[in-house]
Figure 1 (spheres, rainbow over the protein chains, first blue to last red):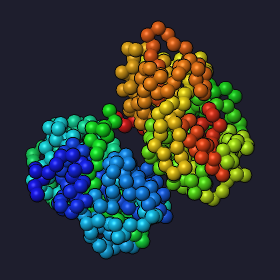
Figure 2 (cartoon, rainbow over the protein chains, first blue to last red):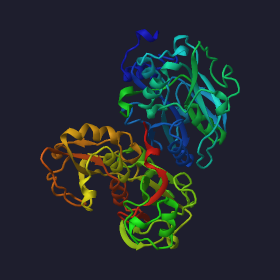
Figure 3 (cartoon, rainbow over the protein chains, first blue to last red):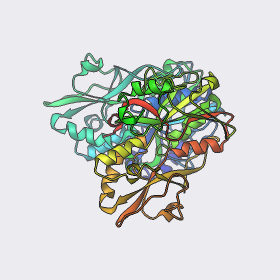
Length: 264
Length: 264
């Protein structure tokens, strides 16, 4: 099934995913709607993780927290089931991936708290609308991601460096890129750094730690945004007994529209 | 001691308060610096309260959460002590006020989590700077506050209606008032309602539920912002075994400046 022939409403897309009839990365699905990162942790770790997100809103923009044992994202996707409505999940035990599955019904427990976090798809839409080229999307490759020397503010067991995504932006469009993304703090918001990669501990901007290398054209400057990989990396570092996430690229599709999250 | 002869740095003001040499409402102290509401709860209730704040950012804009047993707001006031640096505290047991004290050293326990929340002083400064009259400040009376029919999103034991503050704004300054306060989501942000009080369950705008009545001049419209009384009212409704707050008007003075919290 091609993305172009998919239903366009989020709930219809989720139904196909729930029935295992749509197993592919979600970029481009249900256009204009917020897609979310998922992190599920036992209640014992949930307060510290919630606090970590509160202290680090740029890398960890919380959209919704589903309370222990509950499975419905009542605000962002009423009627959905967090255990079945993502195409691929990863299960980690003590920091090691032990399974990749199409639903987590067998792993579900009443003490599990689910966190939905903003993802960069939304602000990339806004940048494209503003006439700023997103080259990695056009080329169907992953955005470049780097582990920086920018510390996060720790909370309980959770600490570690900020992971950023990098996009080459033409010098004359940098101000506009800052303005456009500042409107969306719920999906990472404004850049954390513009220009010199070494200033945030990146030795070679052509060699990303994650994702694919980016091509720079004449007059383009590297611009860095906080990345949703940060909370997952930080949580994994603490080696919790159990943690469940979406698989990279297989996001949770919500009913909210990108513009619903704009602050101004 | 008059406010006008006070030291202007937040830490110097806090030293006087800690020594019980300054026991008066904090409005106007350490001008330009963020003042905060305080709520302290046992760890058992802290996750749900943190979640309540995350779900209701307009009435409950979290500035900092101090982890269980810790007493220093490391981000907003390094070196301060949350047990001593407010002039008056209120202690509530099972929803009833049982003490009003100048420090809470005798009440302190290792399982207490402290929440600092934004207060309207900061956005009122921004409105005044923008040329919008804050009549209640000029007249040294309290802002009008109302219990509305706007529900909050509940979390665990915490639920209840949104409390709002109301300011009369000249019709031609309403757009500017929205713009100015939108820059400060960390201190309640944009209005929740403009105009017709009945639309949010207020039967008589001249009879506030809390605070003092406001005077309207020709061409002025009531504009309503979410109010920091909301989280305290909601927490109190749940009758926790122990809850400690600042006394109304006696805020915690932080080192951060208002403009530090602007999103754009």
